[in-house]
Length: 214
Image 1: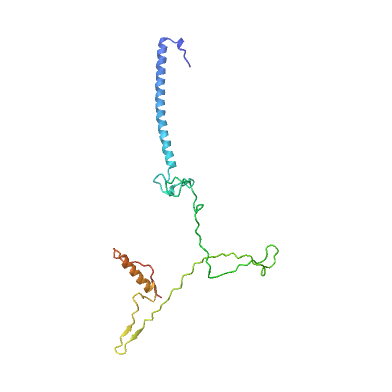
Image 2: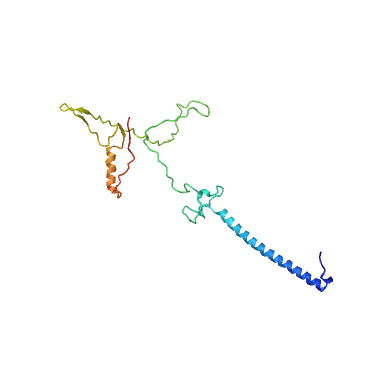
């Protein structure tokens, strides 16, 4: 209930001013506390915004943690940090093309004739030839079949003493079946090793040999 100061006595006014001073002090304390809370909330908003904007490009986070819905910024040029206009991937307009050229002597020619006229359905076997469009396909040749060399290692018994003797195959021929790179490639690898003069002294592992028995 509001009190009219004009109707109050001097003692009542002193009491009223004392009560108002208490209320004012309480309000000051409340405002100070709210200011601290507001400051803490502002700092929290800044930190949350920093975390939301963080990705692999501006923090130590791995690329796998990037959001799939966040597109990376467009590149300004082909060089990192360039200031040129953004360009698309692939061949640029005006750049010289690089295509495989047709050959004049293909290994095989296959004729492709139109079956029948698409207008009236008549046969075109004796129709006038206007043009022939060349379309070439470059197929990779299959690898050559392996060259199989059989070493017939003979075993003979001496007539004089009965000792059984067996022929000695080359050192790289071990086991009944052996896949290897052959003597020529072996010599080439050995020559390369000598030219490289490897400091560790370990032999080169060719990785081309495999042995199996039957």
